[in-house]
Amino acid sequence: MSSANLPHSTPPNASQTAALPVHRTQVLIVGAGPVGLTLANTLGGQGVRTLLIEALPKLIDYPRAIGIDDEALRTMQGIGLADRIVPHTTPMHWMRFLTASGRCWASIEPRTDEFGWPRRNAFIQPQADRILFEGLSRFPQVEARFSTRFVALEQDASAVRATLEGPEGRYVVEADYMVGADGGSSPVRGALGLSFDGETAPNQWIVIDVENDPIGTPNIYLGSDNRRAYVSAALPHGVRRFEFMVLKGEDESHFSRPEVMREMLGRVLDRPEEAKIIRQRIYNHNARLASRFRVGRVLLAGDAAHIMPVWQGQGYNSGIRDAANLGWKLAMVVKGALGEALLDTYQAERRDHAKAMIDLSVLVGKVFNPPWPVLNTLRDGLTRVLNLVPSVKRYLLEMRFKPMPRFRAGAIVPAPGHPETSPVGKLFIQPKVCTIAGEVKRLDDVIGPNFAILAWGANPVQYMKPAQLAMWRALGAVFVCVKPEVQLGAAPDPELGFRTDPMEGVVQLGDVQGRLKDWFGAQPDSVVFLRPDRVVGATSTPLAVSETSQALARALGWPRAEAGSVPLATPATAAAGLVAAE
Image 1 (tube, rainbow, N blue to C red):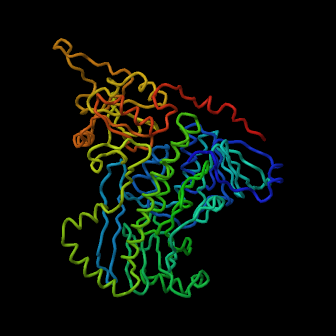
Image 2 (tube, rainbow, N blue to C red):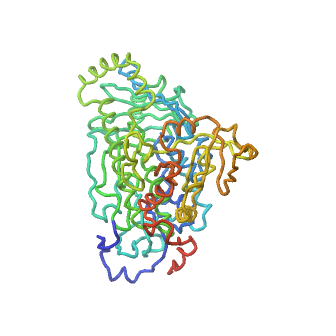
Image 3 (cartoon, rainbow, N blue to C red):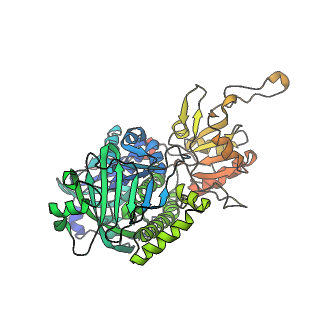
């Protein structure tokens, strides 16, 4: 959406607002939850001046998400924090659905790691949030302010101006762009006048965290009990999470009575009176989606944009996907590297997938906890039969039902001919690779938070025209030649007539696990263009890399259709003139 003719929300008293102190930043993020924190780390790593505000006086520490997937861990890797978060996870966390009698009618046991991390992991969200917050200390240009409330906003073609209220009173922050990552009730979304369509489940659930796990078995179990459905999940550091459906007439005061908690925990524990409860809280299960993810210079992310029931553990992970998609785009636009139209691709790429995850979570919830008891009996009988079919069982075990992000439009160049089998718009694999120095690393750790152009067995820029090569270098792209590990460092003998390609400026990597050979062997093209979020932006034959580069340049919003004809603004020049007005 162009910045022209922008809708806006005007503060209640415009004359008073005009007299307030004005502070200047490049990006303002409202909400210091996992999405806001991840975005702030991403922007900080790109040198973008960022202000992160949170209405609460500190990070939330009550029970929240318990599942972090491989895509989210890959994002944490990209901002340099995965190695700190992983010690607080349980990898390969299975999810087992039980009948009232205890029979397992479905088991989700993912064992794959094609993106470099285990597909499903248990974790304790407040611990991860604290690591994300501590990560901001690496960036002097990033500031976090707590006990600071968003009040109102207005915007025009040049900036967004948010009225905030903190311990020092009211003031205005003027920013190039603003992100509302402020939760399901999102005051930012309300200020934009956007609808939040969907429904709230008719029942609530009480979440209870217990220390020194009184059960001790690993994984997560979902009990389909007609009387009161429940969840029992083993978490890191000896924490056990219980969730029970709240029945009619029950509320927080009801569950504050010790005898009530003993009776409920007695359904899953031998001696419930000995359980040491850390905390408890009642939740609603919502399924809602914002009508738009962008209005001018204001964007929504995480729960402010979409909320889904917990049954697939994708609420947290969908928010991290938002941050991964939006972070690099905001950085590129703010620094003047790419045009503002790039931000339109955020909604185009994220909204449909968020809706698909909402629909899946709602469906799984209805199968697990159907509205009528007779459906429990029907499900139990049907699953007995289906579990005898190997293909169905494999479909569940490997989480093949999970909709993987697949962009059909946006900052990509769709493949002609057979788009359904094309990798364009999908996340690229992350195998282990070997460097010339003999170090074995994950692929992303070699590339860094950059664009990358990879070719199998050859120089990816050998046939690229100077204009396109200049564009990719200006964007900080990394050029990579991947080959079998045994070829690494070797060169053909020139006396036999082979011309040695020095591959100047090209990183050479060895395919340690054979996964890159398998990936390229299954594709018609041998050159792949990766975006900073590791989505495949385009593929090409070696001879067509210049034409593909130019097409991708247009999709990315390069300043001119003819790639390479306009020099980029550097972070330093983009920041010039952004002087804070205190």
